[in-house]
Length: 393
Ligand SMILES: *Cc1c(COP(=O)(O)O)cnc(C)c1O
Image: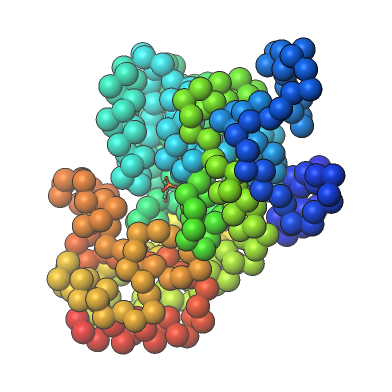
């Protein structure tokens, strides 16, 4: 569609397919199948289906396609394929590309389920995986080899908020001919410049900011037409990880307000980080929007923001962290993020529980670390709630 539209216009209008009724709000095509006018038409569509021709909802659906077109336009990607969840998207992006004997280099600081796919699933099928400290370019350089097929990282890591130098890592990977795959959830599609910085395949859990109101699971893989249609789609459509049309509709509606929400959440996160960085009960605040953060300059260049999530390390370890969480009145204890509601979690005992103490230490997941996803509440109320809860420590 219109390439010169600005972000907020794209978020509202891109990808719309209107039926003969001219509905204003996107229609939910809650159908698995599509009727053909003739046997010949069915045959032709299986050989090569056109832009507005669908076969079966596992392959594609008009509501899902509207979502795919909208997010592809936003990200500046040629094409997109929507998935049932963020993990289905991460898994398909990697598995559709790799085969036994291939080598992958990945940043170590990953969401627990991403780590499971790289450590437990891919290796079971003969893919070799080397983990590096994603913030250390020398480690990336030392790890890539001529047989490196892909590099993988979370551009902003969960929950320690390390910032990966996307452009530099992409250059190192491309020098070896490797495909760069980025899990871009924490950067959000609003602050992302992933494609422009050299990422080949961008993955989102749409469960997070894109829904943004805690309703549906979803994921999406973005890339070139060649990658999406020749590598990803054959794998995805035959292995059954399609996004439901209803969920795609929720995501379309979420995208209409995505820019407004993410910017408000990021502004809130910045205020909270500043309010608590010198608090006597807080050891450190991890947030790329603070000048104290080791990759503050990089974050500014790469995202123009510190993002919507911050982590606090409270003094007194896990017992103090638990007391603090239990004393919060507005902030909800849960493990989603990007939601309208502010959400807090204790990664060491929840999202990253599976890791050994040694792995947690390597990743900086301290016993006192809590991850706070800032919602849409008035920041002053959140600051008061957190201040009050810190008193119990
Ligand atoms: C949540 C999350 C995922 C997984 O997404 P789901 O939709 O829960 O499957 C993957 N990567 C990151 C960085 C996430 O935060």
